[in-house]
Image (cartoon, rainbow, N blue to C red; front, side, top):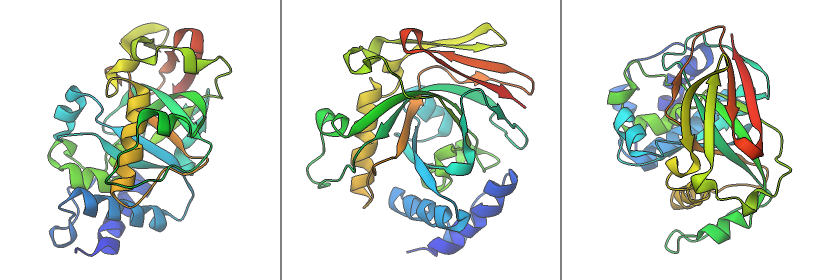
Length: 260
């Protein structure tokens, strides 16, 4: 096993100071998903702040090709990077410079299980307390994230950076066909991208089920109170300082942000 703590400490300054690095040092670089998640957990401890949930990256074939990975990735969300609806999001040090519109779920109870017996969608959805709308402003700490490989990308919170989270949706969202639900991203009140819930592993509920099983298979689990953003429903939209963003989810409402 690699030196997990040393690998995490090599990422810490890049996370805190928004300064990219080429890679984790070769002698402690994670080589598998298992090692990647171990480094990610150590990085959370090194940051010394609460984790408030998870993100899912690379939920489409295009996203997987863009990142150079073969499947979705799970990454931690930290409290300091979770902002309220309408917040101003700083873009300094962000090389990706894109915005994503996402469905989010908050858990009312832990989701545990046996890795040899994967949970089904109803098992996971019964543990959901609420649904929210979100804008993610992701970033990678690697200079060339497309060549970092999935183990390093997992270690780096799967590209998590800032999250703008809307309030709980009051509408009876459980009766809505999220797979075919349209989502639009407006930038400065111009339509920048149009997508649907089915762009995230076929359905945001399926994406939530995926991460529940992924974490269980690596000795972790979704916990009560966790917020999970399920992946972008649109092609990531390029952004720049001064932009105003609004992710419109139709009858479900919208969430907005300003780029500083």
